[in-house]
Length: 92
Image (cartoon, rainbow, N blue to C red; front, top):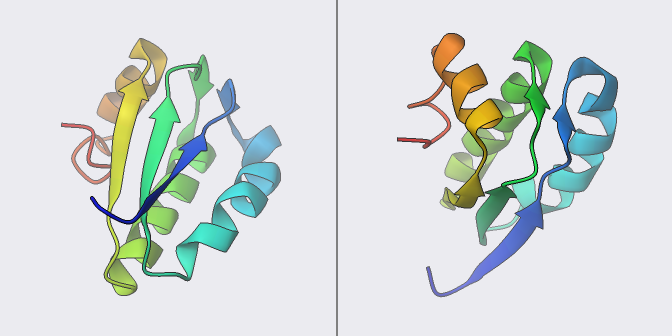
């Protein structure tokens, strides 16, 4: 990835933080710049949080950009696996 930006995810990717997460990701969703997510500090993730990441991933694809990970936490991986979203979030 030559032209990319990095985004650090919060500790909680839950319904309570979805609005703030959306505001954090939204500026990156409309460009053609690849995004590298740092999920190392994620301690909790629920369906709403992971659906927000999935929608973000789809928005990037629509603009010919990619999403990748610089780091992930066990909690993030477990939540994505439990919800069947691991592959859809490029976590494999």
